[in-house]
Image (cartoon, rainbow, N blue to C red; front, top):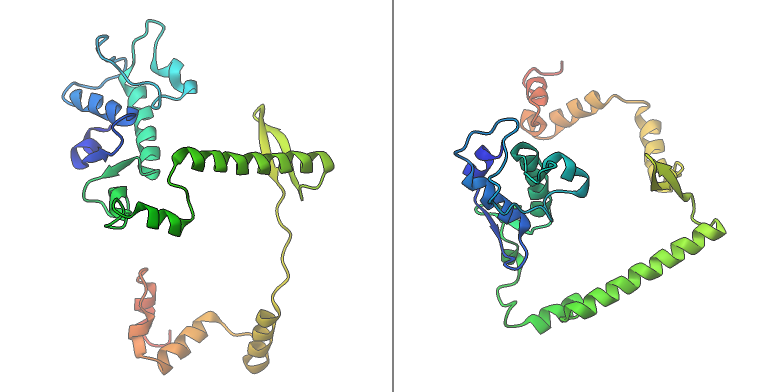
Length: 231
């Protein structure tokens, strides 16, 4: 399953201390030439990364009662873990744009002028101070939410049960009133031209603007309509 993906992409990780997903990918790459079939297990001598790769609810499906790791469910877990790691930029793809090396997003002089850049962001350079401040904000927000639950002032937010687990429920917002400016625009259009069809509007724009060239679209439909006159 992962063989075509690993053959086409070159994956990198800048974290040298903790990289379970990359270790799992390295393991799978060593097994690419071995046939994958149902019931196939990794060699018992292999050190198979589980923490950070296989969720707790999947352990029973991946590891049997003898401690052997089955390859197919393990590959599924690696695929999900790889997706999440790429999204949070822990793992990046060589030659990609959106999923490129996160170091490339830093200013060229970041290492030499960290104090300037951190000051511009309003963040401390010490990671411990940053974490402590963030934890304090989260605790304050949770305390306010807990108090609001007790007082019934959450504005429709409540704790319910879903599939036997606690779940935060947010009531849908009511329909908002239209802005006065939008109401005025709609009223003026209806006063001048009555109820008009969108196709009529497009046809008039085509005639008064730049001709058929301004009616192109990626769907191809507008191109056909534009080249056939006022259909």
